[in-house]
Every structure is written in C-alpha cells, then in structure tokens.
Image (tube, rainbow, N blue to C red; front, side, top):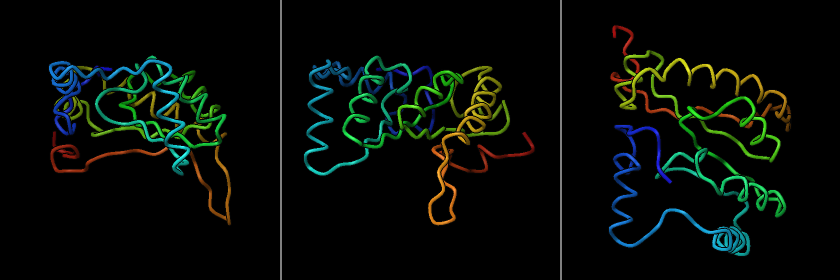
Length: 169
C-alpha cells in the first residue's frame, strides 16, 4: 500500500521498507476485490464485529478502503481507520463518518519541528493540524449519547515523549 511518511515510531520502520520486505518474499500488500470480501466475511463469520485498518501503510491511499467500508457497513460491522491525517480532507472525513467508520488520527507533536523529526517529513504539520481540527469539528455531527456519555467517532493516537512534546523546541 505504501505511505507518504517514514515515521520513527512505525512498527514496520516505515511502510515502504515493510512493503519491500513483503515483495522480496513474494507477498503483496494489495488485496483484490474477492480477497478483500472474503477476509471481511470470514472475520464476520467467526464473530468479529469491528475491523481495524492500521499499520503497514496509510489507509487513505489504499484503493480498496471504500469497498471495505461498504462491505462492513452492509454487514453491520464497525470500522476503525488509523491515519496520519495528511490525506484526510473534510470530504474524506465526511465519507468515512457517513459510512460508519471511526477515525484515529496519529498526531505525534504539536510543534512543526518535532513533527517533521518524528514523521521524517518536511512542512506537513500545518496541513495535518488543519485536517485534525476540521475532522474534530465534523465528528461532532456523528456523535452519539449512550447512558449520559457522549461518544465521538474520532480519537487521537500519539506516543507522548519528551522528544515529541518538548515545548523548548
């Protein structure tokens, strides 16, 4: 699938490296339509009611994401999508929420310099921050209340350390 980032914290050491390792072993990260459907249906048949899409690439650049969301929606399953947020436009967030998905946003520093260092990118912080704020605002429309608790289909995934949250840098 690939990723536009090469985050230091990524379990695969950056998805491009991970995908190259898969290619060397003859394994493809892309599933065709039949395999995507079989995977989701098999998970449903054994009792899974939530599909989590995370790791080894940025889900929002995955060509099969909309198909998976459609299928999980038809089966009444929940879908959780972890994203670095760079490709998360307001329109894409609307599409995800309206298809019943929850979004977990990876946001690893509030300062541009530290963000660049962690993600090994340059200049993406402000784009991602704007996408995060727009998605948060939009998520309010999709919140539900259960037993006096408000549940919003949006969360922030982070690894707080002195490196990522250092107010002096």
